[in-house]
Image 1 (cartoon, rainbow, N blue to C red):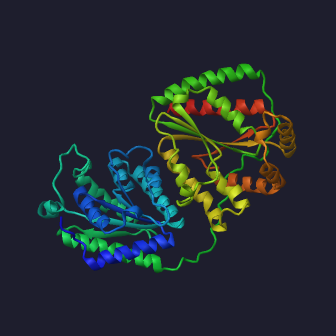
Image 2: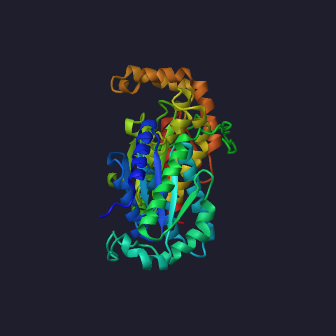
Image 3: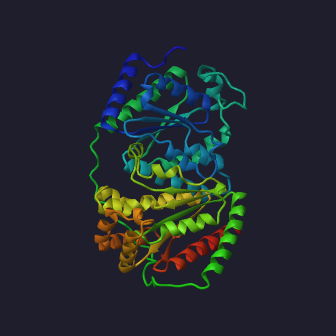
Length: 465
């Protein structure tokens, strides 16, 4: 097959790839258009010129990603530092595939989430290039054979599992206008003779990357946190009790098991997030929740310090792969809220990253909920005296001594700092679609009952909708 990219442009692409690797810049190039043959062939020509170890190519069939995970599926496939990601179709094809003519508000909501997602990528250092390969019916009729054979409809190599007429109408009449932003503009390449199309596409990519590598980082004022939401920690009595404990727990556990069965055959999923003070009883609550569930339908995810691979990507990347599939439950032992507490207190993130974190997390959770996941966020609250008492008991108990570390004692010395950060977190992320539930946890039995009761009542309410 004849190479279509001239030698001087191939050399330029290689030089830019080396600069991208050296600078640690993640580059994401999104290709959209109504003809899959065109997108595939253009990508093939670009890949031929690049060092394959630094390229991540992903093809997304709109029919496969039209479900709830949409944008999170794409977040998981974004490139790491120094890599070039090529997206053969993207969240836009999925959005258009899901669009119904009379559901304008739903389309607007999906496009708003798309803009939030792209803003998150750009603000976290990803260089984003969006290209539409605009093909008319007459252009495909005349030039289509140049881009490859017209594969059978059932083949994943086919023209695409989309309606090209609907795609063109929605993309150019509604989608492009709403998503052609300053931070992520669209580049339109009109499809014609294959040589001319490939040449213009490559020149567009080279120009965009050169501008991105040479541009100075914009100097902007520090983001301000919007602390508009009520703080559920205020006026809470941390010492609570419940009787009869065993009877209540048995009843709630049985009901939770029945509701899990209903969830498993629904188009919904559930994410249960646990945050709280050290020794507040998170592990105990998780243990009792799990005891009520069928292990086939849930998994527990413990959030630790990021691995080397996770550190190469944007902050929320490592959490996107654990969002539960339909019918399943994910239980998080600590979550993405580490950015708003320990990371800022210990200096593991910048002031700007901390200031942006509420808006980014709110957008992330809105995407999760918009995909059909029932999201519960628990904060387990105890007093400093109760924490000290539990620390001392753990120190004396040989079966629990492993749970207490020097870091736990150091964190205790920063109680006031952590408390201030928790209040900021509550007041900036206690949204309507993902509210916090504060669990008064000085009494462990009361905490377990409240957690189970909240899960049961929320599941019952959501599954009845």
